View 1 (cartoon, chains in turn yellow, orange):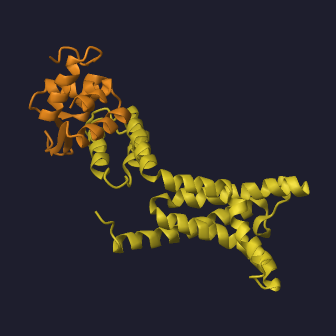
View 2 (cartoon, each protein chain N blue to C red):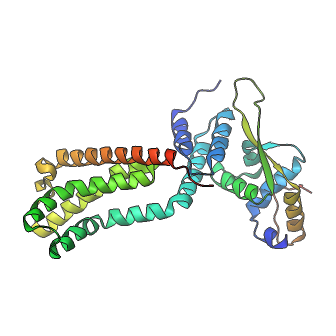
View 3 (tube, chains in turn yellow, green):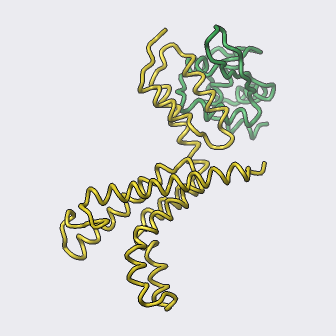
Length: 193
Length: 101
């Protein structure tokens, strides 16, 4: 019995975890060949991962495109509705300040929850990438507009490291809640054939 | 059939040729990969396409030794053989492995 290379095992696990609809059997087929081979070569597992990424891109390209667009323009997308609502006097004047203050925490969490709910398998990606880009944009804007040092930015009124960790944790929890809701709805409302 | 065959890549033809060599026998992914030189990242998307076109069929075979996993195996269909014959008639066709016919 040959020793199982842990890295190759990890790669094949990643490749065959939650394949898109219609590819479950093929994912099992790739894994079965990996298990059947004496060497359990990492190259085979890496190829399987490449194939699985291709399936995902083919299956979820629109979702991923929208996600990338939201992440890339997160600053504008998240604040524009508040801005126009305030300008149109849809929001009482004394609520504008608190909305902007708390909105910066609520909106990323809401967006994470929404994206994770639509595609539960991407919850970790959503919960990690969105807050990091969001904070990164905020830090760059603050540095650009106010000529402040990156390390003078204090998300959550904490130090940069603690603030970023808090925001990422907060968004990951929101994404997990979104995943749970999405999975529950998927179970209750199975896709029509 | 001619239109279908024209769209088959050299890699797809190589897989079909390897399956044709096995006749009515079943071939595993690792065996096809070894014979054609295709890596898993190219092989499985190709097998899916060929299967969806009805040029090959697949099934799970019981393990040869106890304690080993069941394996997915592949066999060429009559449509696959016809596609291969059609491709062989075209001068530009390059089929691997050599000696399939």
